[in-house]
Amino acid sequence: MKEDSLKAAMENLILQQAERLAVDYLQDQVKSSYQILGKGLINQVCVVETATHKVVVRMNKLSEYPIYLKEQWCMEQAALVGVPGPKVLAIGIAGEYAYMIQSFVEGDNGLDSMAHKPEVWRQLGAYVKRIHAIDVKGFGEELFDPSAGEFKSPPHPGSDGSWQGYVQYNINSLTEHDRLIDLGVISQAESVRVREIFEAVKRTAYRFGLNHGDLSLKNMMVNSEGQVRLLDWGSAEVHVVPDGDIIQAMQGILIGDGPNAEELDAFLEGYGQRLDDLTNLKPLMLLRAFDKLRWAIDRSPEHIESFAAYARKVVEMNLET
Image 1 (cartoon, helix red, strand yellow):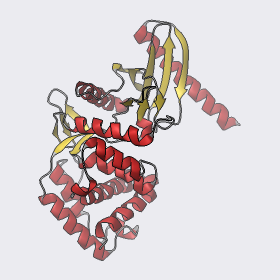
Image 2: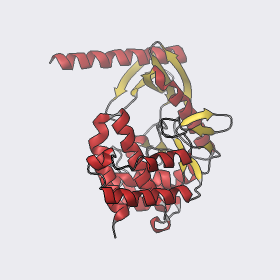
Image 3: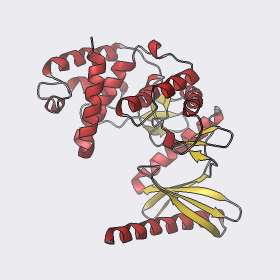
Image 4: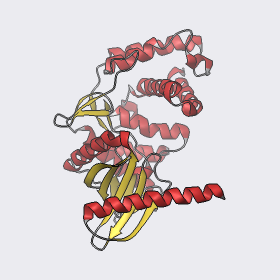
């Protein structure tokens, strides 16, 4: 009972903060407001309506401010190539919060929409192809130079932040004392084969482009005409295309929280791609799965078990004979 009261009080404080931010921006009195719950894992998201406007207020910890700047840039670039989504009205810092105010997008969240899901994913595939054509430079998830569309990956011990450094870090991590062996993700013999796969990845020339990075129904809105609008660019990055976003969509099939096989086929059809033509897909899935697991081991222990289970599935997919 006490926990419920504390939760209600916290939600009320969040809503009050969102209302203040909306009033300061719109210079209008609040008519109604509510918090959107259960559709996002990171941001606090509220809808605030006045007599003349309806906006979405997203709030996060102060350190997330650069991500809001990245999201704004990505949404603006996506709109220029015909990918519909909300418009960013304001970004700022208020006390301990970073915030973003967006236009309200009418429709149902993709999780709740009654629209035919394969058609939703088909539209998304067409959008993603346009996104991959946006002019960008670099590699990684941080928007380094908006004027040049340049992204970077922060360096860390074992990697200089470049694509080659990213691959080499994962090669060098394949040792006889590898934590992934202890976790049952690979055996000593499989580690040798994985190294060969990663060495081949390192020698391969790839095309890089902007990836949305979190393609899921929760990040879509579907209006009454069935048009899909894309939300939440917080995970956007410059990575291999088309493989990066397709890998992220395929991950849902393996762990059961994304598109099913029919929806993935529709997504690829919308993109104009055939799964059989994506010869680099499995090795890149393996590389990403290992890198994410190593990140969890270093930074997010609560994710180790689920990331290890997924990585093992990708190992089996790559090493099957």
